[in-house]
Image (tube, rainbow, N blue to C red):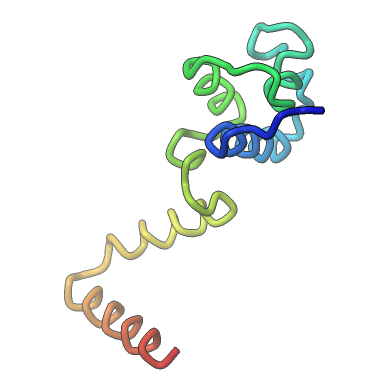
Length: 110
């Protein structure tokens, strides 16, 4: 029976799986793109091996992502939040204050 993995390892496995699936890469295909044996990513995702940080970063890049998205608390909302923040950053200070006040007001009611 397979041993339960530490939370941080499971996090890395899950996140890489999300990115890999989003790009429609099989574990085999990602392994080959990384220049490793065909079962390399399967072994990682199965919890049987660890991979070096450099390989993980390369896999993230191959999956057309970046470390910020990879470690973002809610990866499914990363792009939406990134776009919203970019819009917010362009607003004048008085508009930002009004938006913050509105959000605070709504949160107090809930």
